[in-house]
Structure formats: structure tokens, C-alpha cells
Image (cartoon, rainbow, N blue to C red):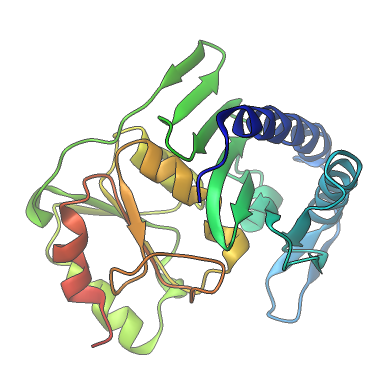
Length: 266
């Protein structure tokens, strides 16, 4: 699974180019009167989502024509390639269309279905988290470039739990989340991908979500793991391109087993 260091360096540099390209598009449309359409699942989409992803695909095709791409807005191309880029041009479209700056662009590079590189880019905040296989997660902002670490929190009763919105849980999922929420010190809502950046930076301890697609979580995995945390499904299993939409992220890996007991399906 290891990627040669020089090859990984080149991929990181290119991923940052992609993030800069995405920023130029999303910043152009942010807090402007863009039309909002509804997709088949009734989730919102705008010209900014579509144009951002199209631009990233164009750059990938030019730089790495043999790589695959999986994106939220424009589907899959060569998904069986050795290396596949997984893109979410605007994670948090509801935030974007309501003028909330807590949306981001997610960029992942996978090999054999597992993430080797992930970027969480917050274009309006001017913050970028970069995680890569075997390396410490870095935060790039106006202060420069530095490593970040998640925090120690071995027990649920001391943990801060976050999720984007309670409506992402239905039926038994809602019951399981509520059961977990009663065990932690504090539960917070909102954030989309920014929640995972908060976790990597040591400000919260758990993020639990459901109904996700690979483009929602593949970029998050190297960021979380490179900060010292761990991310799995609700049963404590590794996340890949083939995983379902249930995600559990913990800044302290010691929390995974305790949290999973409240969430797992069997």
C-alpha cells in the first residue's frame, strides 16, 4: 500500500494545486445569488459545485491521464485504476448557499480503494489540512505550515461529540446516536467537513455521521489518522471505497471501541 516518498510528495503538491483551483471558483460564487437545484436525493446543488468539480477533473486529466476520478457531481471515470482521485467540490452545500463559511472542498487520492492522501480545504477561512500516508497531518494557513495533533481523551464521559445535523440519523441510527450522546460530556451540531478538522486539531473528540458517500469521507481519513486519531465505520471496521455511509472518527483511538458499542448494528 505504501507510495514512494517522492511520488507522494508530487501528489501532495498537486493536491494543493487542486485546492487552490477550487478556492478560486467557490470564492467567486460565495454569497452571490446563485440558482439552487435539487438532485435526485433532494440535496441541493449549484453551479459552483459543478464548475469546481469540472475544473478539478480537467487538471487531473492533464497531469495524470491514467488516474481515475470519482466525484459527487460528475460521476466516475476509470474507478478501477490503480490511483483514483475522490472529489467533493463543496462539502456543505447547504452552508454555502446560506452564506455560512463552514463549507470545504475534499480531495483524496486512493490506491487499491484506500486513501493515501487527503485534503480538507476551507476556502473562506483560508485554512487547509493535509494528511498523507505515514506522515503527520499539517495545517496550512496565514500563519504558515505546521503539524497538528488530536487530543487525548480515553473516556466517553470527557468527550465532546459533534455531527453535522441530527436529521442525518433515522430509525435505529437515531436511537443509537441518542444513546451515545447521553454518554458524552457535550454534543454539538454543525460543521460538515470542518468537524473533522476540529478533531484533527485537538478541539473536539468524536464525530459520528451516517448517510455518507465515499466522496464525503475518503479525504478525511489521512487527515484524521495523521493527527493521531482513527476513523472507522460504526462497527469499528476500516473505511474504504466500498464502505457504507456510517462513519465514526475519534481523536483518541482508545475511544473507538467504547463508542462503537453504542453504535454498532450487532
